[in-house]
Image 1: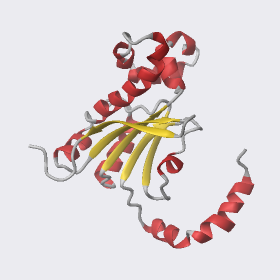
Image 2 (image 1 turned 90 degrees about the vertical axis):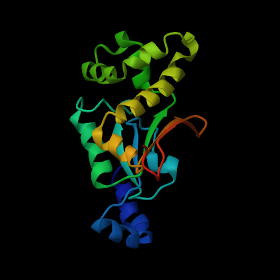
Image 3 (image 1 turned 30 degrees about the vertical axis):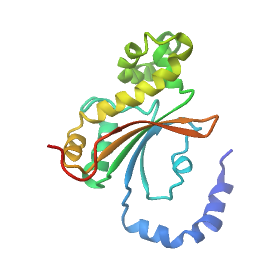
Amino acid sequence: MPDRSGVHRFVTEAYPDLKDHFTDLAAVQRPSTLFVTCSDSRVDPSLITQTKPGELFVLRNVGNLIPVHGADHESGAVVEYAVSVLKVSRIVVCGHSNCGAMAGLLNPEGIKHLTSVAGWVEHAAPVRDRVCDVHADAQWDAAIRESVGLQIEHLQTHPCVSEAMAAGNLVIEGWVYDIGHGKVDFHYEVGTLGAPNS
């Protein structure tokens, strides 16, 4: 369980080894990637990607959702800042196995008492239709993958994203992290860095 002893170890043991790195970070951040993932406590972006502080700009929420442009100002602000100000060259949408948000999406009755959660996961409502023909035993996994693809579609409704992609300055990737097996499957990649799209 986290407590102040962890903070003490950071200050006395971890920070001194990275002091120069943190001194540089204090002046400016230059992350290469916006990493969109779930609030799930089992998902640790820096651990999965083996990155240091300053390398990822992270957006976390229930279900790693990105609503369409204008539908949610909080996630929209993160995307806009990452792309327009920080000039990230990559956005990763990372779903994960056993995602409770996708379970709730597939079974709305089970979360109707969680009114905020129920309303939030409806941003991924098209996923239900996309997996309706999938065998019931496989629907949960299919929904997790399909939702990652849907979020990539939603990202492209954000003007800053579509403009950066058209200029060849941004790619979007979709990942699914398997918690129990420690694997990452790379399901989607959209865009090409370099020459502008004609």
